Image (tube, rainbow, N blue to C red; front, side, top):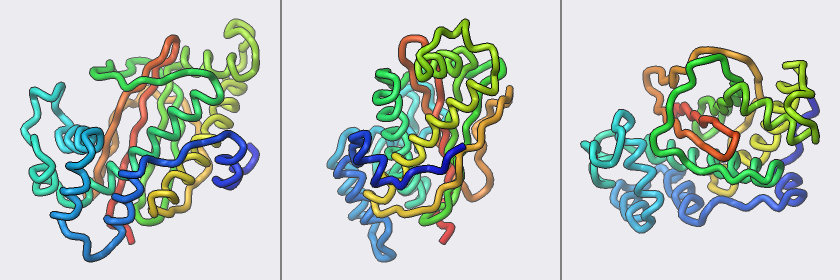
Length: 240
């Protein structure tokens, strides 16, 4: 697999957008050792979208907003601490990287699925490790039909023509390299510099959202016609 191109080269070549200003400001804020909870809460509360993502992360077992037991930014920060802010600050760039890459490479507009169903069969798992302001793993999970459809579009073939799973995995790996470059560029924009490992592609039936002691995790489902995938993020917020 070819090495990942520098993030700035990928951004220039494919016109990748940087993260929203609110994410950049939050990254700068949480990177300050003396940042106060009040400052962070005020910044998050000024952005409805960011507030919604924080509350979603603070209520991981809730099926809908009606089931939230934690309903305000202040409640979320009091319950989980500042670590959850870093999780959301990193998750936004990851989701932006996945959505932008699929849009550019495949012309697919991925939308967040409110209540996605878990994968019950073997699927393709792409994992990316990172070390820096935080340490953890980002993962992209695609159903086997989704991976086949993606590979076929990239190669300009029909799914029926792709008989070798190794070829499909290679294409997913190349697509993941695009995600990696975009993700790293976005993290740098948000002042959350880190080192990323090359994507590791496997096939698995395990679907648990890994969350070891001392870490925070979030998962969202993404959908487009003929495409079904999940994005996982597991973070140790205070690794440095």
